[in-house]
Length: 518
Image 1 (cartoon, helix red, strand yellow):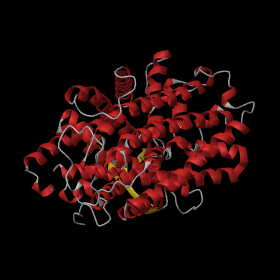
Image 2: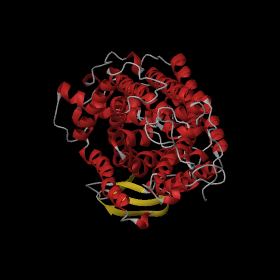
Image 3: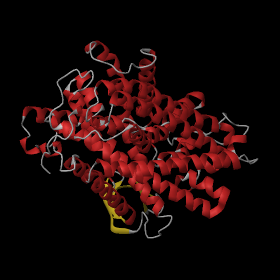
Image 4: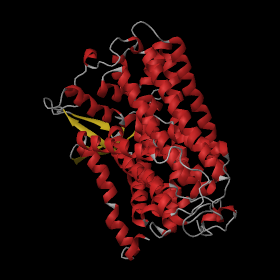
């Protein structure tokens, strides 16, 4: 997989790029993505398993229908304000690597590296692993042999409440990662065909869920008709049950747990920045990147809100909270159409997760490619193959992602001493979201910094509502970071520690002391 020769020269002119022009290696990434393709990357990367699963955990944490919808709405506000800010940066620097490039230009190469390092260790790869596990979980609805406890390698304790295993469910997740990685090494045309096909299909499925729920729901006992729309306590909610060991009570407890209830919605809406990672491969980026970010994010935020209204219109709130294996969408369809409805929904979620993982795999590799071109990642990762795609970056991403599917949580029954093994889906969310929010704040702040640092740079798009929108977005994300650190210090701390592990690695790489890593 040696370097291919440049095939397209239009990437050599970068509107508003504060630094030098792209290298010839970057121009080997073909600008083959049009406006629809870019929108499909945004929507396809966002719509995965989260919208169909995470409302169960959020409803348990917050206890009332109104708060559940507000959690999704506030997460949507973060997404939209972030997209408004990101659009300015994306059109200034339509480069392979996207957010990595933005942070590098605003803060220097060390911060850019920390972002790329964290993306590789947990943010992007963790998302891919979590979505692949979700795909396998829903395949288990149709194939009984695909199960979390059907072991090829029985759990091996790692201590600290974790183990490692290989079940049939984990094997399917790894196979999915391998398949989509291989298809994306065959060229951008293949990758975008898979992406567009599956994104159209799963968006149609989500729209169908919304229309069915809103038209056939509204029974007398549904959550939407509850008189306790905002009163969590009337619904039997307790902060000590929602968050074991929590000592606070009253409105303060509700406010703090509201922040944690946003973890699922934020996870479901993350990855919209992925379209910036492929900035070198989007035609007319000054127009198409803005359209993709604003239309794609706006459409998904609206669909997510309507999907949650549909859940509330179909199910009692207690059934949302305690949906089997958190499969709220499946429970809603089963309530309306019985087992055939549940099976159809499970199939739709498989389509959704398949397409989501394709988008994440396709775009994530471009960040590591850009890092390698800057001398900050394995040299081989900075090459393209005969199909003009960073195949080595795709393979490196796949290997680490496959490993992330293997860990299991261990819960021991105090009375029987019997161990129960879960997956790390929830933990991956809690590792990913605080780290992602940290870099989200830096990205939004980069708009303000580059307005001063690169004031003369060409800006095909200017952030609407500047500077109010960026400041509001930074403050809201900052409050959430503090809240999650307070409520989940272990998992949030691990997420931040993962970011910080990149600091010594960066200095080794910069000094050339880690030649063996190159």
